[in-house]
Image (cartoon, rainbow, N blue to C red):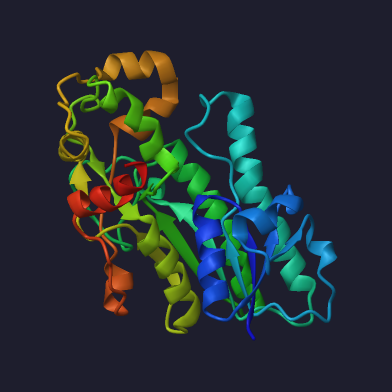
Length: 302
């Protein structure tokens, strides 16, 4: 039985990955600040730990999925908040790789989280894993995070970086925050609405992580997003239609900038990103049409 260690396993993505791994016959251990909550969120067979030191040297870890990180859009980006975002990603990943390097029995691979924010604001340009970046805070954060994980290559470990888009999920994620204004009939596009939203259904996100884990050809950076990204204008119109509401109350860019400061760039800029490498390896997305994906996710609210 293969054994996978997951950081951030109690989160939106991690909890689903845990359950899928269990269904596939894996043994799973989750590193969490609240290990007592692991059974409830991830499954009764999952072992919860609070520190890497709780894993004995003779316990074989075949792979690591590193998903830990404070939610980037939960609070305004003050200097203190940026330090929290960085510590929860960069510092934890550094500690993970340092711990692995000291182990006699090392995992075969590490799959480490990142975000399409690595590319920064790219307008309508089509973005693949070969694309360059626009240097801004999201790039700097993701780049340092990725570099911490890539150091594991020095120990001969296969390292995969997964740059995730906006995850469409039932009962959580960014969509849940958007629902109330749309249900009240006061939803609408953000700013110009022309910025691209690289999205991915939660089911595809979890399946992609396991696909990368199991396919030994997988290496390097992967964009985790649907092959059919849409603009914010198209997304909000589709969401409103699913909720049988109008989307005629746009939120001016100047208002978002005043309310959110630098963090407003998460909403006003985007990436027309495509999952070129995953598709080249043969990964099949279950959800490529945003309307069908929204219909599936929103069905849980009905």
